[in-house]
Length: 349
Image (cartoon, rainbow, N blue to C red; front, side, top):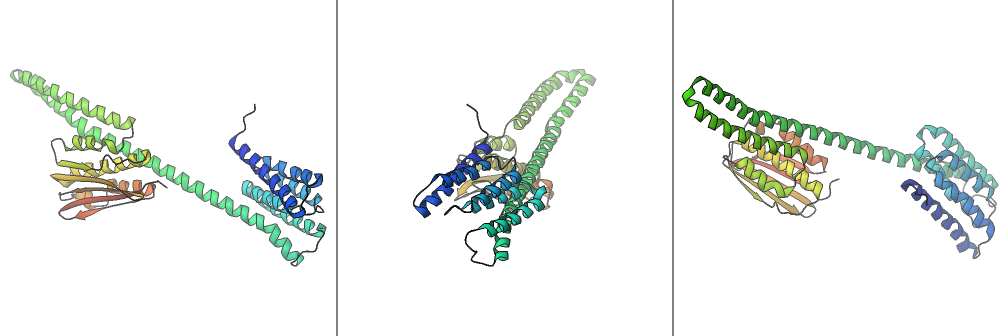
């Protein structure tokens, strides 16, 4: 059995619906259905299966068949032909002038061959019926192009944010692991210059290398996976080790996977800024669902610091990540410390 592609299946269904609409219209209006309208409906509907591959050709074929079937009582082939011209404009922007000419020409010829005189002035009807599918197809194509442009922009923004996260991880490697390697080098130099201190230096080197190895594994794990809200307690424990007391509420809130990943990154960046720059002794993280939105609040009792009081790279990244999902993020002084508040839609848009 031949497997049809999804667009071809959709066009086949469209052709079937057009056939049923044409034949059903004749049956409803006339009460009977003979072979001529059935064959005309079939001949007019079948070309629609190829409307994506040969949009202008299909529109021209439909126009000829509809013109030949003008005298069939109750048969509305004009409607399907107008839809074919609409599809031609939608799929072939480079043939716009040709499609407009064919549509207007066909409308004029169809009006001249119609058995009954038009209810409106001939020229008015020809312009309206000839240009209406052109206008509809153009509007649909412009809408598609805007949607594609917006999607492309979102993908570019997401790619830039991924690159920013990798740069942040590189900075973490430099700040954390680089610090330990420098300390190991100093201990090794001290042990080589003072033989009596060699044993203590080797012990400290062992401790520093183990810590550096652990932090390196954590950073590599961050590159391999996209954690969700359930990893917030682990994040808080890691960042709060030997530093501020970090409390997390709402980490068990069930959220969609994509939303949870972005929420985790927002909390991660907020906590990193607070630990490094705020000088806080207590940090609170609150996550809760509010109707169709997810609210994230990270507050501390620190001074904010220069990285928080200015529109720094980290805060700009928080806002851009939230806006990428259709939400918002704001940061600023609150009570006796600093507060980051993000609102994300439950279904990213």
